[in-house]
Amino acid sequence: MPSRSLPFFPTIEPLLFVDGARRNWEAPVGTLTDGASIPILFVPLLGNPRSSQFLNAGTLHDAYCGVGNEAGLRFHGDTWQNVHIMFYDALTVAGVPKTKAQIMFSAVWLGGPRWEEAGRGLEQVPEQVLVQAFQSVQAYIESDSPEFAELLRFLEELERTRLAPFRNGIAAQWGDPPPAVPVAAPVPPAGGGVGPVAGGDGASGAVAARIASAR
Image 1: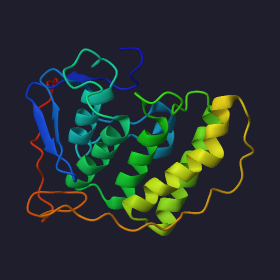
Image 2: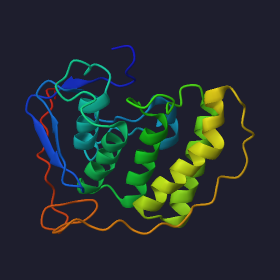
Image 3: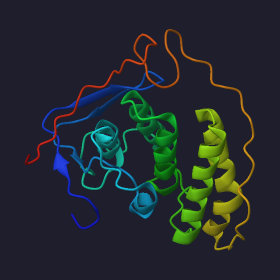
Image 4: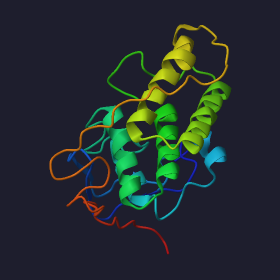
C-alpha cells in the first residue's frame, strides 16, 4: 500500500484490550497493521518503531484509524483523543518504559489522524514546524519526566500557542516551547488506576495478537 512506509499484515485473531479508563477496545480479525502506527514524519527521529513490544498497541491503534482499515468494524469508533490515549495505555501495559511511551504517544498526537472535530487538524502546519514541535515535546519529556496529565496539558498549550495559527494561514514565529502548567493528577477509578489495569498490579487486559506473516 503506497501510503504505508512499512510492510503490513492482517491479524488472524481478534485483539482485545481494556484501557486505564476501563474502556473496551478491539482490533477485529483482518485488521491491517505495520506494527508501528507512528507518523512517517517522525520515524527518523524515533528510529525504527517496529518492535514486538509495540505490536499490540500499534495493531489496536491501526484498527481505529490506520490506512487500509477504513471499512473495518472499529474504524473511527471513538474520538481521536481517546484512540491516541488508548495507544499510550497499550504501550505501557506492554512494558514500554514511560519516557519512550510518552514520546511515541506525542508523535501520534501531533502527527496522527484527527476526526470529528472540524478545525483541530494540523495538516496545514509545515513539516519543519511539526518536527520542531515534536523535538520540543521530546526534550520536555526527557528533562521533566512529566505525569501523563501534565504531558497532555503541555501538548494542548504547545498546539494553541505555536501550531494553531497555521490553521488560519498565519505563520507563527518559533521560539521556546511554552512552559508546562502543573495539573493535578487524575483520580484513579475504583479498583484500578490510570495506565495498566486489572487488579492494579500492572497486569494487562490485552490478549497477544497473532499476525499473519511469513516467518
